[in-house]
Amino acid sequence: MNRVFAVCKAVLAILFISQVSVAQAMEYPLPPSGSRLIGENRVVIVPNDGRSLERIASDYQIGLIAMLEANPDVDPLLPKPGSELILPLQMILPETPHEGIVINLSELRLYYYPKGKNSVMVYPIGIGQLGRDTPVMTTQIIERRANPTWIPTANIRKIYASQGIILPAVTPAGPDNPMGLFALRMAAAGGTYLIHGTNADFGIGMRVSSGCIRLRPFDIEELFNTVPVGTRVQIVNEPIKSTVEPDGNRYVEVHQPLSRSENDDPQTLPIYVSSSESAFINNPETNSAKVNAEIKRRSGLPLQVNH
Image (cartoon, rainbow, N blue to C red):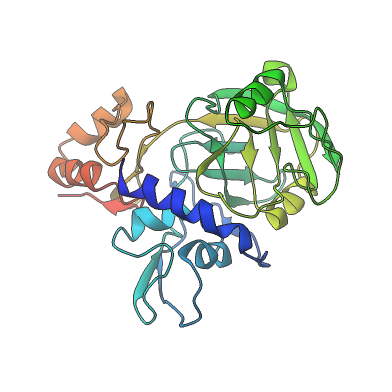
């Protein structure tokens, strides 16, 4: 069991006592034509207030695993006061149309391109846990529902029952509803998958759901209020992203791949390299040694890899 997976389990065990914080969504202006690099990383000092790494991450609209990728030596439960933390706020946009909602499972982020605006909203998300994976797909939003009821599928009820947990057939809207207060239903798979909130406010930036996309309460409310029915949704799984910027600078961003079994270590699990990424790595203008070192490191931070 790798360190990130182990500490995430520990965080899940204690973060149910966290209080909901209030933050603003990360909105970035779209980069110039031909560019896919947005944002700037920041460094902050850990305050002496006993907050966990997840609570600090929430204040900056970042998921837990993204913080651990960027800061592999930090104690996630009690970061050392006065120490430095890298905030991974710079990123390469996925190589998809700048339209509607784009979700990259490997980086545990949702990108929303509001129609008519020259910007992109970026949200950390929770996705399907091992064995209940969120599928790669292109679909659309078919329903917006405030105060949703939760009707777990027969398979989900069976899985929970095997763990000694008997789920009710229907959980009405309210504070005990694990879907939170807002839900966006996608068309694929007969409407099985949703983008929704949570009543727990933990597990964002982690693999925790039964296949749906989970957002923090204030994030799903904002997204719900701006996303219309019919919005395109594209879900990809790209642990490696690269870009050649208009100024000639070349960047690569590598995230831990999604594990396929309980014995997988995402830090050492081989990463599939697509033909386009292979062409980028083997280009004479790319420092392939730097790229390969970052594929091993998997910091989740864009790294310049020119010779």
